[in-house]
Image 1 (cartoon, rainbow, N blue to C red):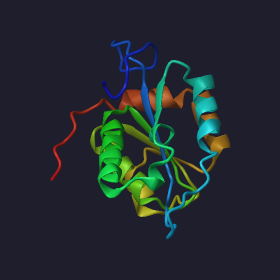
Image 2 (cartoon, rainbow, N blue to C red):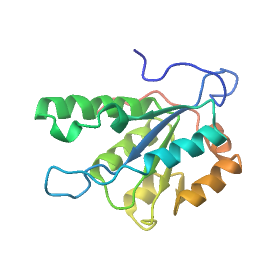
Image 3 (tube, rainbow, N blue to C red):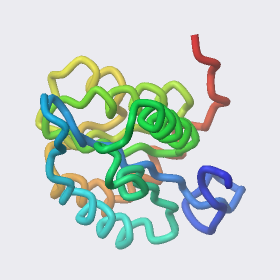
Image 4 (tube, helix red, strand yellow):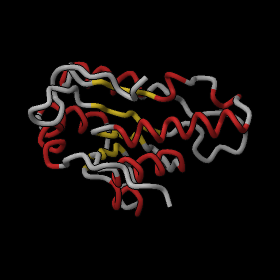
Amino acid sequence: MPPYAPGLGLGPAGKGDAMKIFLAGIIQGSKVAAEIHRQDWRQPIRRLLESYAPDADVYCHYSEHPESITYDLPKIVETFEAGLDRAVACDVLIAWLPSASMGTAIEMYEARRSGAAVVAITPMAANWVVRAYSDRILPDLAALEDFLASGELGSLRAEKPKQAARPNG
């Protein structure tokens, strides 16, 4: 199955494909135990995208793997690499970072190097990775709503023509 199914709407100019949005964000973060942070941030972002980008194809890797904290190492690697493939294939990555997340940082990096636009929602505006790999840094969900309502998402996507993914290494 392709990472994202074609659709209608906010895709690259003249192609009619849906804009592919990858929701990235903290899951385990810096927790020492095999536990995760609250994931209740995902639905509000989905609702905003449904309101302001209804034709977008939104992918949430955690929603596909809610029990991933229990996976064994081979399944962890397989799942994480599949998520990276989705991040590379997206047009826009929206990253929720109330605190640092190594996985989200890698997803941001890979998405950005493949030509995707990266929007970070975080109080960590001074963080080097956030600054280096975000096209927009927003402090909270209210700012995301303002960003989406302004139409800036489409403009940002239009500024970032998708590149072929670079080989690893």
